[in-house]
Length: 258
Length: 258
Image 1 (cartoon, rainbow over the protein chains, first blue to last red):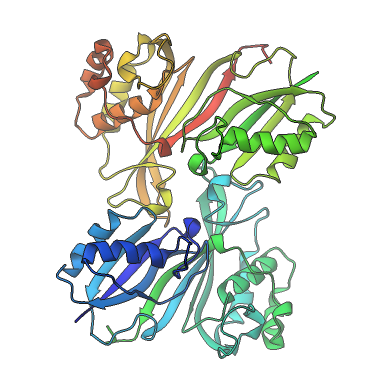
Image 2 (cartoon, chains in turn red, brown):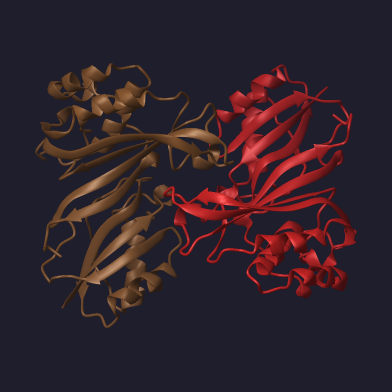
């Protein structure tokens, strides 16, 4: 029995999220269809993260098992010929008991924001567009208060697993600002929030991003982030930033797990 | 009776082209719906160019007439609140007999290409992606042969008005190459073909772009463009480049026509 681990990129704008649902176009559904054709047997995909509708990925992970003859390195090209907005960027054989979700040690998410006086319609599915420049230094100061192991109840939406432990560990939370370009090639300021953690609560990254944007707009003091965290109440944090700005960038696995 | 001229930007990836068609989502249909709500009466839009499915615009033009109370400069914001992938970027009152198609003196189209070893799924609706760098100097040399007044039968698809005069005048055809970035912010070479002319045959810009790309890939000699033009046969030119790379950039009107 082989076990194959995939690294997957997708444009989430045309999908109702990762998870297969009857009657909806999902990444899991689209990939399962293409992989089953390529492997000549129905496959069952275990994805690491159930990304929401509109959320993108550069590095989603998923594994599937079966007795397939196709060499792992032939899978990407074969599948990519069948799909338009999902791309397999890596495929390799892993240990028989490896599981993309159970063996994940952590994930890195990227949240992208651009500051434009008027929204760029060509970027509407790929950026959170704000109409003023953000105070990136203030955002960095606020972000620092979230690094480490905390009860993140303030940054949790209803709708996820209600019994998930709200104590999570963020090992990295950075804010980068740089000159980018809009769809016409004109200069604008872009911001990238990059979050790495062992596990996340429902909508946690988007609520952190929304709260940091409110900080960058001057609606919150950078120093108040520690109080927001300590309150353990959802209403104390900022709004949930749009799905369009979010990418699952990378899944990290335990050493030797794959 | 007022006559209002609009300048319109749209992301063509979600539309079955400009022209209203029953049961299809079109730019004209979407804009007519929004304008009728904003103006409080059914409007009838005259667009300059019937762009095909997947073709974008930064500067489509359209006019409509009626007895509306709304000041022209209030129209963009009111309409843009109702639409997601169409944006009115300018609106003004013009002479009562002005017509966006009949009074157009010319149009400028922009065709965008990027060279990437592997296609970027996030740019698939906005660029013609080629896997090798193009010879931009060769493309410029070939492009020069098309400037001026010629019979463009070699650059005409079946499917347009069969009785359109194949003699057209191109006043500008430039090829620009520059360092751009892919969706991850990594450097790649981009190419912009910009064509200005009084009028165009069906698919003429996309066939010119396709033929120039084949020249840039070394599949055609730059010197052969004059022969391709002189042949007046569609099969002598290159393939029709994808709709995704094309923008209607600007409509030019006769002096004093509006």
